[in-house]
Length: 375
Image (cartoon, rainbow, N blue to C red; front, side):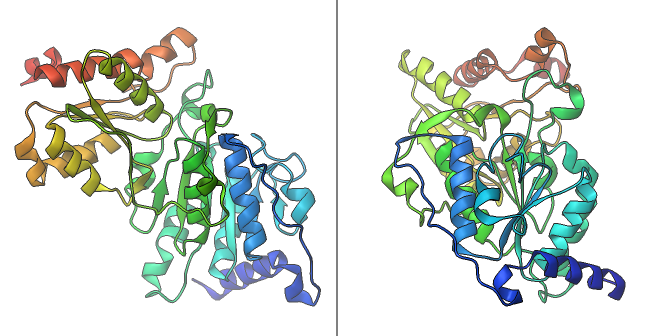
């Protein structure tokens, strides 16, 4: 890095430093999270941010409308009033600019949480994420750490068309130097975000807009300020011995619904919530496939070079391949830019019927007609 840009980053970082580093001391109220068992995902994320801001004054949040507007999806609600404009930093509409500022702050010892209003907008900053954040630790021989979190909604919402509907799990999952997580429920949101903020590596947190308003029951353990979910470890949501379904984010819920339906027919599916895209918990998937002998992967992204493809490769390259009793099936989004019209959009997204049909094919050992024709 040139001396010119290093100077710019250091100057920017000093402007974000906690106030006591400039000779004064701020006192914050203790985090007060309502001891309710039913918590929405946006509130789980909010509490995780609040607790980590309180725990470590190097943590700051930066992005568009994260402060005075309290976040486009209200994930940062109340943080600006509590921590002030020095740590909850509103920015202009310039993803490349504020992402570069956040990465430079991480180079200089802060722990920024960089919010994108949607990960589709992060395309404007992908050079900063990949070439600056992901590669610097390696390129400097480990001399510089990059403890930064990139977070925001990922994937399709509803009627926002092709430029606002992409799933970036496979995109970022392909990059050495990044860790990538994709929470499904409120437990995932709390535990994964807290772990991401404490990690010394750049972590991409792929949330889902549709899930922000969904509520889940949380145990006292999950509500604890010390609760963390290890990055790189999947969760078995439902045990079964006839079929393995692997998914992440919103579609984990779809898999659970399909598993409930098939259970009424005496078919017990094992549902795995990946939680972490990179590193991927291949061990949990392989052990499950060895038990059930069948595999279906479910994701919202495009079919080519997707997360399901990587899971398939992991099975084919391990001894789990010898345990398969039928060809595995991948359920994905359609291989087209996301349509805007509601009726066509529905056809481009994975549905409960799509997942159910894939499961039945695997259970019957059938090969889809189009694949058989191609062969």
